[in-house]
Length: 636
Image 1 (spheres, helix red, strand yellow):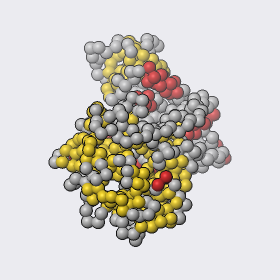
Image 2 (cartoon, one colour):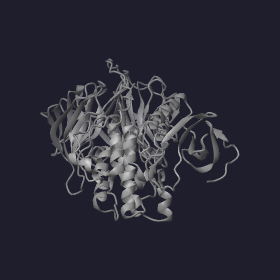
Image 3 (cartoon, rainbow, N blue to C red):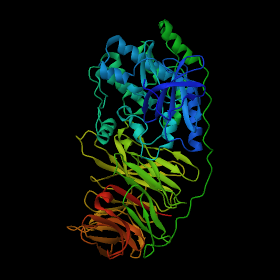
Image 4 (cartoon, rainbow, N blue to C red):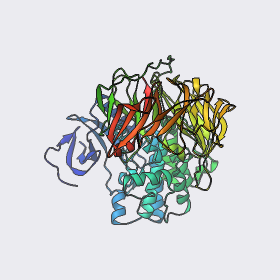
């Protein structure tokens, strides 16, 4: 304990403040004394809970935390605000943190390690039963008292997580965070089980399962690498390996894991608290299958059996508020017309030197972007009312539909799932989010693109080479209906790296065939037309333009010349010659092309006419910044 500093409170909520126990990212922890003389820990939270909504969430989360029974936890006793600063009063645990023990004493062994595992699982079972997810389980939040391990600081991270979900902060401790915590999605109890396993590995070996070091490399190991379990052995090793599965649904619950260590690996009984949080955390996940305990559980010994029994017989927590009911909403009509000839405003992309050169008369604008300039891949979408960009999620590529009603995203973490994939469809009109199932592994979706109706999404289906021993093959395409959530997958094999694009009137697709020809297919995969000798199919598909309904190809031997071909007859309709070093990105509107031009250390995204001549700058930045970002244009 350290002495108090100038400005520290002398008393909080009737508790006398005695000294400082520590200070961290979430605030300052004081040693206090209750009116009856009982020692308590008082945590004064730092910045991040400034607005009324954030404080309401904090009060709700602490309300749940106060329902957690003191089975291997430091019980929350009181909470409130002192001089405008939120605080939490909890039971004081006289003992060092596991993190300090590992530094000064080294790894745990034998019975001591097993007691730690059982005690912390008992705590997590109690926490989850009360409807709480810890979100920051780690050696620093496990105290080793003379009466056994105690878990602290649950119920705080969620309030901070929701107010700091702007892409600039990571709530949690990266070496112990689960893969899904880097995706910006709601987090369930399975993330605590991942962190629990990582903590057990650290307790047994002295180091986290995925190491430490630079954040990008650490995140990459958590997302893709196998954990290093070191000398952890026996059933604890097997259990830790299951809890470190990349797929949250494959991890056992705290109660299941506890039963495993107690010698009863059967599934746990119905657990309303855990089941509710699983539904909140992963909307696509079905509730876990449950059955009664095996009769042999009655033989489990003494205090632990009593603790587990009390957990399971406690009343279920109050049901979480239901989301608003779905409401029907008509599809918006995307803005018609072509782009204005000149920009009149400059909009700076937040936290970058990238500038958007815009005109209020433009029917298209930058509606979303993905950035890799920081230690995390982040997705951002634009508010159609204010024009401001908002954080969408980590490891996301959000694409806004024409008219702006839907936002679709394929998260990078989809590559980690073993069973099947989903795509996120966020409906801005109804405020609902769908995650329709798309393809089964080893297949994955690539390069989604919206139809002009603002309802359907086309994506290429690839048989992905996860192990590196097989050739990655393009096997077909998928069409997703954003309104109904329906998904149709059509088999239409193509060569490596080929992509599918919308055809005219969005009633079919274009494909580069294995023989080099460009084919027009209907949506069931039947070949309608085939054009040979037209060149390499370029991005953008068939577009109704000033040249007619045409599709673009790259001329053999040069990247500057783009040719346009009639989608009905295959007749050549024109050629655009782009500036040296330019990269073609397809049609912007019926009169203009989209391309990137690099000029020394600078780069521009330009609007060009049908001959390839740039007529207006749309985005400007350094080459480095523009290379680290992807922008999507859509009709307003």
